Image 1: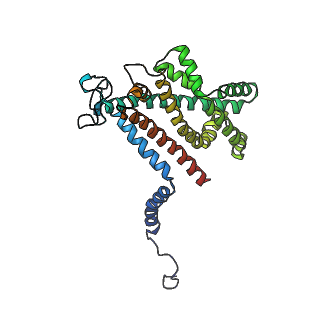
Image 2: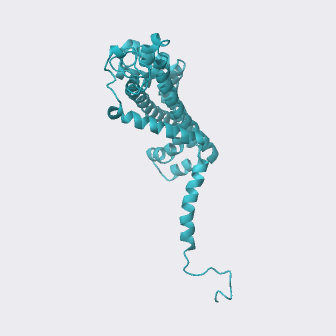
Image 3: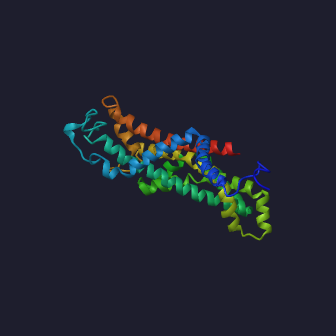
Length: 300
């Protein structure tokens, strides 16, 4: 039978499928981009810019952040000092960039340790159950009863201020929300049919955790971590503001706020710039967390 006998028959050796596949790739990418929440796009864009600036700070900051020039103290914004100078004549922009490396790195390190340790503890408790689960959950109840800020202040006051002590204090008070969330997610995923099927096939507990539980729990855990980053950053800034964080000659955004407090009327920018840096950084990561939650809701 020829094509003339059956006009609806597809012609042989035509590359329609390959052409349609090539055409569908950009359309699929465009569809994914259209379905991505605006908050996620804005948050990722802003945080990438901030991270790039902080990583390049040693090479691009205009002045030594500790260099003093008392003859040029509390100078307004100018071509030589874009954000002016502080009470000791130090360049505010350089100190803002250098201090951001401490603030963001401390918040990121403590958040990573809390997320990993809390997730592992929660998964182990959900899988083991029994006395271990009861004991760990009671410990989390006790720690959750106190604000993380109070726990961190108590530990820093006992162990002394410093970079390592600050990280340790924030980790001890910050792993509990991740443990609670990971435990709940594990219990929910563990009750699904594909987990029962994996057990029936003789899969080990380690395989089930890394092949099924963690991939399914990753999205809500990532969203929660993004939402917690802003809280960590503000806590770091508050502890430094109280003198319990990074010690001189190093500085972060919180200590810059504390140092600028007596000079608010003479030079309000000394308070505005570090406060705005904390706000923008915390907001951008929070937008990422909200965008992940919104995208997950759309997919469900």
